[in-house]
Image 1 (cartoon, rainbow, N blue to C red):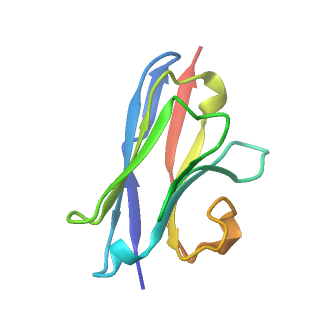
Image 2 (tube, helix red, strand yellow):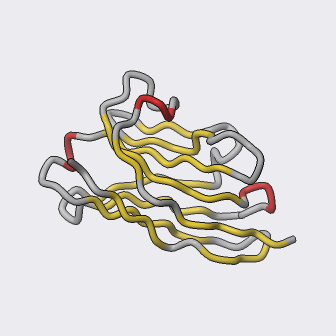
Length: 120
């Protein structure tokens, strides 16, 4: 069992930056792929970034967001730069062994989410 706790969300102006953190319990953190997803009101949950054997990014965030992980701290980060109002959503981290890291249903464990709001 893995428990995930996100932090770092908040309100930021367009063009600003935030860094999200996701702290994981358990001693097998390094064996899991970690993903970030987001869900805006009235929209489906969408892939943002993932880190496993490789890193993956949604086209909408490529060049602006960076996923990284510190296995010694059991933590995965999402550095978000040049934020846009369309980035407003609840951001979730996920852990698992997905065959396709961009598909949310293939992850086993989820955090509670952290709200990111970008004002124009």
